[in-house]
Image (cartoon, rainbow, N blue to C red; front, side):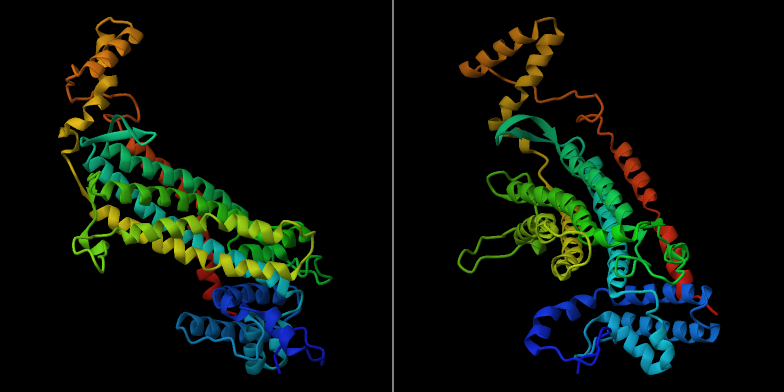
Length: 448
């Protein structure tokens, strides 16, 4: 018989049980250690308001720390007959402590438990994403500085347009990722608010100290209104996946550029051989499969906000089981994005750049604007200079001087990479990760 926190000696049709539980046990393994952290904070608060004795709290914290270690060591399982992670943790506490284990659910519902678990999980995973995005950004900025003087064609409409540089190309993606971090920061702030104490969405008649659990868990604040705390389920996931989608969009575009520029028709860059694959029939092939898969995976991640939106779009306030399905698309998405970011960082660090692209005469016309600007600086009206250069090109008389002199902020000769890096560091500081880590470490080391 399945262990259920809501069991009242009535049986459930096995097909219904299979259908309603679905992948919950698998998904809840993502949340296990966060469920324990939340239970520790809740137990400390219960003792402070008189619903637990000191000895009971001491026993609960001891057992919860043991469960946390089992999770870290990969030994924790949600048993086949147990409904979810919340039930498994409470079952283990009850086996060890008897009636004391049954007291921990006072003033709590699985609704605010899973809300809390999801928020603790999400802010932890966002910290990992931010760290890797920062690493990739620093690689791109280093490459930008290294190749700042190496020119390459810039394109509009996939037609050669004006001189660009590898300094600009690498640096553009670095700045894009920094902007993406702004959105991640906003999503993190939405996430980092405490829903615990909202119970099933309508609070509790127990005198719960919600500020205490907020501080114990390192949240910026609580979700003040208990109904809104429950309404935040789905909204938080949608908001966070919008931020993940922003990062994924930048990486997908970079992957597309890399595939294009790596092709023989362009020949701008060469991917390391160990990051390419071969063909079963064509001996010469070195395919950019890693970037092609990165592009596809990042495009899939960009669909997540829409998937979540379609699940929550027509739900009124209060809890509904529909929300369970969000876990299946949301929880695994962080690892998938992390994989793409790590692979992209490795390849961008080892990519080889063609430093002689513009020696090919087919790129001569991209210097037409440089020539028109030169004539303008000599006194010719720009429109006349534009016409003269255009006619020279048509007549085959255009012989450019293949030099550029761009000095304004953000241009080929003045990349502003130091400002991009400064902006990134300021954004990362605003997350306040140190406060969260300090609170969690203090909680795990708490003694009674």
